[in-house]
Image 1 (cartoon, rainbow, N blue to C red):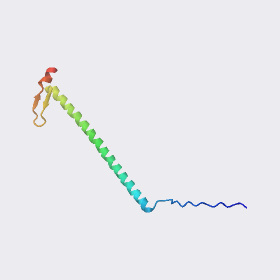
Image 2: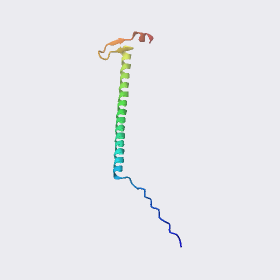
Image 3: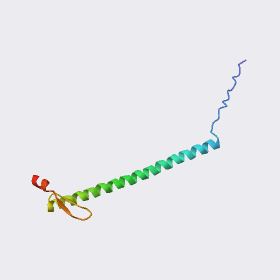
Image 4: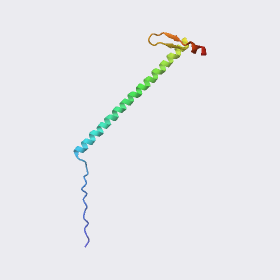
Length: 92
């Protein structure tokens, strides 16, 4: 007569508890929110850096126009007073 094999039953749980699942989902949701907010901040930062670059290029153009018209000068941005740089003009 053939021996019957005993069936081994695995008693390990197959799922986490509802409480554990809820805790995991909440933490993952918070992480996703942080990542989303960081993305928004980085996008805003990129836009601001682009605006800064454009503005610096505009200032450079104005400086070139002033140098063409007045030579090498320093302009007081509060009063508009021109301070001529005599030494720099001698070199040119």
